[in-house]
Image 1 (tube, rainbow, N blue to C red):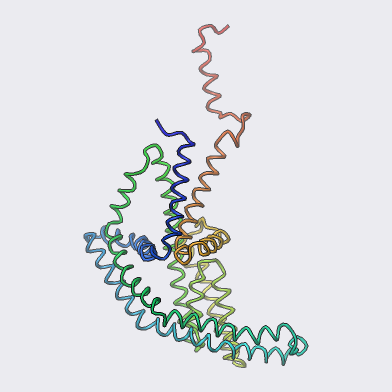
Image 2 (cartoon, rainbow, N blue to C red; image 1 turned 135 degrees about the horizontal axis):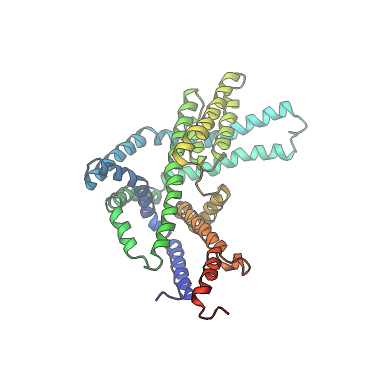
Length: 372
């Protein structure tokens, strides 16, 4: 006999509370395991495909690990130093950029940019604030001993965790399935399948879109000679997972920098704008329809709220788990709404199921010993 609904609700509530308490208490301690699990989840379809091609699971995992290691080494040698260097240079150049902007506005709009105006004072201090705060942030991340140790720990632990999780992924899924409550196993499998589809579309698909667009923007902006093109491309690609935000933020930043660098050379400014228009065309007509699909199930507002809430409560680790938790909560909410609409609370007593009414009328003459 199944447990009463009240007892089941208690158990599931306790499990949810325990999950969030563990996430809050452990925090950054579980960061390598969260990252390793995310990477293993993304690479599991590749390992499955290699297995179907005839490779043994361990051979497939070793091949994937070697390719990933090669990509990481190339990125660490060729991209990361340039990215850090341009980021620091952008923070240092912020005061000069805002000073040039203030001089430009003063020439064009003298009344607006009076020395005592709010806009003038804001522009004069904004660049210095960005330089000081941004420089402190980058310097602390680069020079902090604890930061270096944490990075080294991540570089060592994440590949190891990913390797073992990827190697045993199918067995772990089968073991979890074996532990499901028998009465609820079909429903949990259905919900897990829907969550997996949503995550696969968003994390694997949208992650690939972000990577492709980030590379496209960075290469395109650097090819036209825009200063800090790699930083702008990385920012635009990273923010692409929120519809339109990546293109708007990256485009505004790139075109703003292009105005200061190429003032008077309008064809170069136009070239920067064209790069983002082409990127938006590729995203909307080629990349997103083929890699993500039309129905992801994660509304942008819900996604932003989840990232903000989990980031505030659990830090960087919370931001990493925000997307899968938001996807799971969205799937469960849609399932609960469907259950509610199929129940008597929604339908009421006036709307009886047609099949039940038909059966009761058909069975009355045969089952009634005295029709009179």
